[in-house]
Length: 223
Length: 201
Image 1 (cartoon, one colour):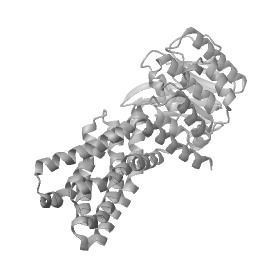
Image 2 (cartoon, rainbow over the protein chains, first blue to last red; image 1 turned 45 degrees about the horizontal axis):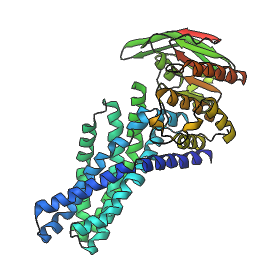
Image 3 (cartoon, helix red, strand yellow; image 1 turned 120 degrees about the vertical axis):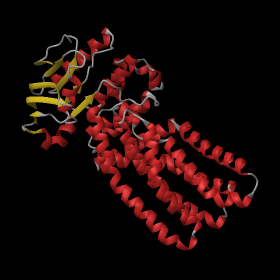
Image 4 (cartoon, rainbow over the protein chains, first blue to last red; image 1 turned 60 degrees about the vertical axis):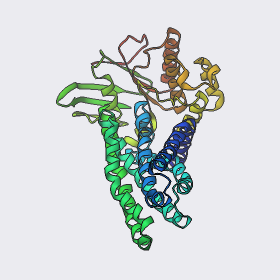
């Protein structure tokens, strides 16, 4: 019960932190929408073309926006010693990674999911496809959170070079984008593609605590 | 009770320190002294099992620390040379988060008294990021009181503090020891309090 309470108050802490830094989340969302507008203006008024490549645009921008939030993952808690405080209060490194990933899903990815219907209207994606877009983005954003956790924990060991973290996220996101866009464009293969995406999610979710936890341990050792 | 036997730490084939011995019973204070870069923080991290020692062993309550780690962590508070308070939040928010996260049994009156003693009671609604370094450090000491644990491991607790706060800290150390608590802290200055163990690095 005591441990469960600690988990609840970990999320309370994350909620307070994200609320105080709500401008960061809003900046990410504004970046997302401004970029959509830039794409629309650069393509021109052809609705058919926009509709055809709209899903790809939204996915690319989701990816770029999530790399913007990578710094929020561990860096602050690492620098101010809170990772160590959490560890000394009973959270293993792997468990910290799981909690931080869930926190990223809740406080960073969900605001994006909520803005996707508006993006679909702007990009002329039909209402029938909205359910497919939503499914692919829900699974995809969870995978991106896990990948973000791994790459930002690796960054702690790498003299805080954030370019490397972004590159890792982008490379590993390629298969996710392929299957996610496939879900929307190949409606007949919906179930099989969702299963593949769900499989990838389970793999990265299983690897994340192990890989991120090890990186956190090594970075605290060498700090 | 903490016992350290022949502890040595090497990093990247370089000896940081070797053959450190320490015995700390409840009610006692140990100090680690040394110049900058002599390995004081590394030794504190080794005591917390964050760094793996190359030789030697650490015991907590008669058992190897590694085998009794959960119990040790339940009894220890570590204050690093960084400040763990969240700069974007107010002092009040930080206290609320600490109280809940550490499952503190300290009541609000005790916290208010501590805030008054530390002269932080007028800044409760101020964001930590706007406070001076000394005030942030004082807030960090409040965590010691909120966590309310027996063993305090502190990295350079007396640096960057004014004379009044240093006196206050010394009094707090003595009060903690009187309640069967124990303290290990690093310092490159003479603290002017009775210490049972002094380790030079």
